[in-house]
Amino acid sequence: MKIAIFSDTHIGFGKGSKRSTEAFDQAKQAFELALSEKADLILLAGDLFNEAIPSQTAWLEMFKLFSLLRKSGSEKSIVQWEKAGKKEDFYFSHVPVISIAGTHEFRSKDFKNALEVLQQAGCLVYLHAATAFFEKGGEKIAVQGLSGVPEKKALDALKMWDPKPVQGASNIILLHQSIKEFLPFDDDMIASIGLADLPSNFDLIIDGHLHWASDKNLETKQFLVTGSTVVTQMKKLESKKPKGVFFFDSVSKKVDFKQLPKQRQFLFEKLEFKDATLEQIKEAVEKKLSEILSSSNEMPLVKLKLKGSLTKGLNQANIDLKGIYQKFGEKSHLFIDSNFEEAGFKQKLEALREAQFGKKSVSAMGFDVLEKNLAETNFKDAFDVKRVFDLLAEGDIDKVVSILLEPKTASSKP
Image (cartoon, rainbow, N blue to C red; front, side, top):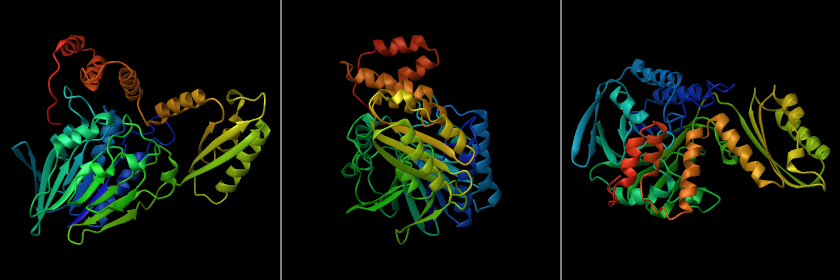
């Protein structure tokens, strides 16, 4: 059986910007590639949407994507969903799709998430601490999935879930979390799961969330990071490999990668300075941009990372690069990240950029701030922070009060 795998389509990304259609265009190519390669099953590893509460435009784009599958025509098939002894059959007249929710779609238990809506619409089967079975041509696939959860709770959720391989089937796991070995720092607020924590004896473990692709064969597990289908985070690793779709052969257990036919080029460069003047910085930046744009395709994404020291009397606030943005803005989507002396300024700049380009919504950033502030107190998980945050956002004060007054009980299964 051939299984198409991709993730992090982030439909709704770039709303109001020049890149407003890019997430949809790239996702459309991913679905079309799955169809052209005659995939028997499609697996999605979360963050289909860019926001927990998608706009009407984002919903329209998502349904357009699934209409591609319906128009393709396919023999009828059944995916069986199973969780805690409950079973339900889902019928497809197109290539079946199984998906988990990502961190961008995460909502507390008081609210339905976007993946549950897509399941009710007959687009896909949604998994959270659940299993989906699919059979074709005498082969059986067991897909077990854990949707994205807040990072500091991810390892506990994985341990409570504790998935086991199903005998007589090809066994696949879907996750949507950060992994310690793929990040440059160790912080449980950012990643609590390491490669050693992943279950063994599965044919393939798939992880979304990280936007650069990687395929690792470990001793007792094959681990695949899908990457995203669209550049949103603008990390250096995203510039190393094009976006695309992975294909898993359930018989040979091999994974192949096919890139999207059309995608915006992403160029990342780092420039370092020592006791630099503003003129020297501008000259170096202009030279580098002229160099890399001379052989690039139409309107590439360009990120320059500037770091080092400034000459005496010059500080971060004096670094005015408006002229460079104006000069090269018609040739590229340009982002310049300067990190000289004032870390606080950099953090504010990054926060504004995330809000503008959809890496994180304002509400998501507010939730992160609340979590970090609580972590510095004697809070000790006295209540479900995400649940309270969502209820406050909806104005349900009475329910929040009742939750805060409830005695704490032991954690249950995810």
